[in-house]
Length: 381
Ligand SMILES: [Zn+2]
Image 1 (spheres, rainbow, N blue to C red):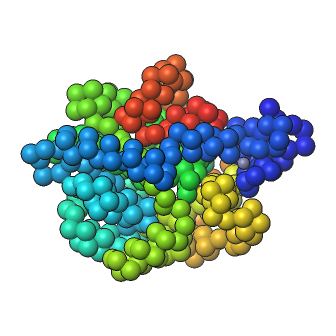
Image 2 (cartoon, rainbow, N blue to C red):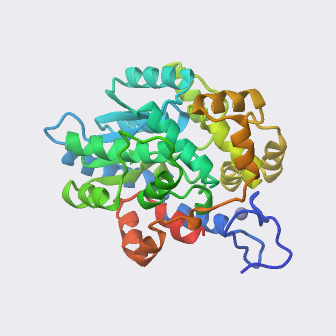
């Protein structure tokens, strides 16, 4: 229920500019209420540890006789590095680290990744996307005038994790997305599915994508039903909010802190800049709001952080990204000035997903699909 005077949530930093946001009579936004429900659903502390022990038992049993019992997606960033450490040392699992590189890995991310994997004695499997394909897919999303322009990463990571798990006979994929630390991104800002991706490629690609493999519904059905692969967000049950994570990673592995979320992927400078200049939203609001809700930051600290000039407001950095993308400033500026579009302006599977939302919900609750994908796709919209 949206009241007339609510422009900003009384608890977090989100306001009326966030697509689909609703405010209740206390002026608290739908994202805060979703986080409350998720906190209840995914307890930490003693209860969380107990749940993780049961999950670890299941994973260990499923992997008997095989070299690995789970795959963990890693980027060299704080969340995935901590997740890998937690899986190996706290849960006693035998993970295979899987990394997807779309050509934008920063040097510090590569160093961090190598240090954490060797420090934990975990094998690392890296899948590198064909660079001309990666560049063209990103350019398609920019030309489509939609808010999110890094589909290569989202599709590539999912594909890399499932395909590696299927090949290795591993039944568990561990994810490290944390609603407490990273929040839930509004669906309109970064929606993706295979049909949507295909439609952007058909409409906007200027060169052929020769090696790109889409991940379609039939792939997921095969991985889920035939290979019986499940996705578990173990991060939901342990505390990865706050600086104790960075401190441990630095001391134990010599991990280097860039001080910026997503700085493991240099394309994010362009992702953030583009969203702010074309759509007028600041991506940082999602994570800062989550940190305010989790109590890591006060609302005032969150607001002050949001007012600071972000690292991506750097024209040289934008030039560097555009040059690498092979896109001229003129074309980019014309796109920034063109009418804004959303995924709903293109063909996608969203209406199909909505029809099967209860099946989707059950699969999320059963840890078959990522735990809070249901909230993201159907509640926060
Ligand atoms: Zn809120």
